[in-house]
Length: 551
Image 1 (cartoon, rainbow, N blue to C red):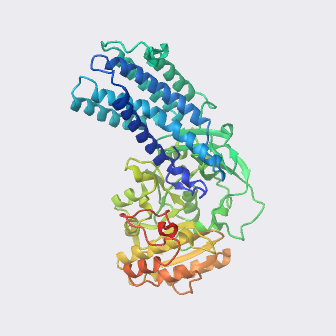
Image 2: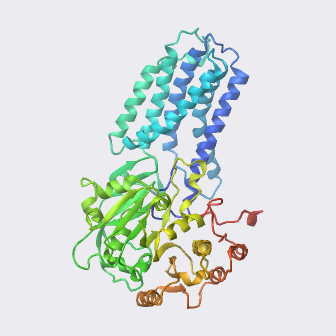
Image 3: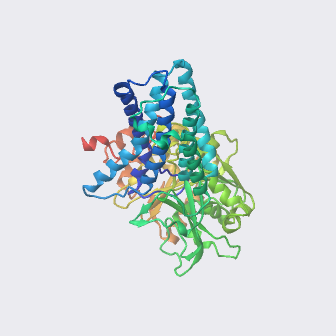
């Protein structure tokens, strides 16, 4: 499955449905297990306590081979988004390849529970212990090898279980059974072969890997200098290229013709963030001053700052460039911190780990701020998406605790009295898209914290399809507003909302005029997209299409 991590990036909307492959995979696993149980119930009457271990050995061997075979076939069968009937055939094939191994697994589990002479309670308890151990082992294995190699090692583990079943004295199975084929009678050989395949695949750069297709182009593995898998995602680092600097929302006044060395950090083949090479030459990093995501630094550039979602470290560079010398980067995925801090990797290239006052915390942003007693002058969360498949449950790929009223109250509470919180998200001049939800979040959080007039705490500016929302713990001071207005004018950003200026977006104007939480929700429900503030009981920030619109 593909997931995205807590990082400074946003996957293209065209590819977001692929993140839900996790739910699809789980559904197919349950379908296969159920199918296997039905086969045992209706078809395998000849299995008894006297010969069940022989059957379990053969079925478990078939399960191991099925995992490997179906996985290889799925690797060679990417899931492109096409708008014709073939799309149905592509997904039907995916259903068959995902469910098939679990049918065999379901047969094995059902036989062990219903046909063996073992106590059901003990058997089921061992099954649960195995499942729990598998969750922990997965975390460890993905630190050592890539996901495709880990799949072959999982298959080897299933074959090892088959070998254990074969050690138990048992009556032979029916001579005419397909399970009497020689390969099913050699679980030890199968286990060794699959383990060698898994370990061998992990040692080569261009081995068996998933095929990623983005914008119609197949990903080329040989363009990556470094690839690392873990339980969150796969992070792949391209070689350094001389290119124009990447900015999320560049000012029209950004000087043209400048080229910098830059790498792309690719996340699961779909999302990505850029890592510029750090330079100590005076003015070399000044292009960062032209990004709308850094607008808040014109109002606050000293004291203590924090960045949620370190990613490539670009936001840390921005905080340092503008003057902060006490900077905390909170990152969910340890792969990024390892890249930024390991001298054998990208530490010298990124440069952020060697800057004065920079420190890292490997943690979920909200959890870290909920525990810390520190107070900050500025907290930045620019283009951070968290679809990471953590251990919090099945909905971890659709829930988002960073974008809820309770989460924002945590961030705002971590500010000093005159501190500011800055968030950047997508916005269209013709539609509020995510910006409406960001503003309603800010309004709701401020209301819950006792703000009498939330609009006095909020400043919004944008450029192109990106906007930055600046939220102050207290009403924005006149000096802060003056610096922000000057920066917006000088960089030719679009002023969308200010405490003492007309709001240029009608949806935002409506939301900012809300008198209380009830009034805010009543206003939000008027619009085609759901712009109501997400809460912990409904934490679906990115799910803005209302189901009622399609019924």
